[in-house]
Amino acid sequence: MGEPEIPGKRWDSAEAVHLDLRGLEPPEPMVAILAVLDTPGEKRPVTIIMSRDPIFLFPELAERGWQHEYLPSEGAETRLRLTRV
Image (cartoon, rainbow, N blue to C red):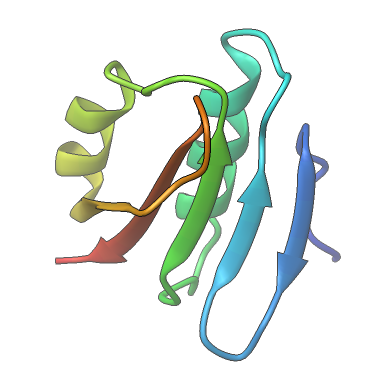
């Protein structure tokens, strides 16, 4: 079975899963992020690029055992790195 179908753009590296979710309307960014976090066995950090600050995501991260860190970003976008606690 392959990767789940998620909105936005996804690419993988050895170090992280990367999601570009700019331009998506809620709840698509949250759906995409949670689909990756809930993938069995996924332990790599997740780097996300979004059009807005995902304030409703933070309680979901804590519940699933993930933490977030803001990364430098350009313009009005938000960049986060999510890692397992």
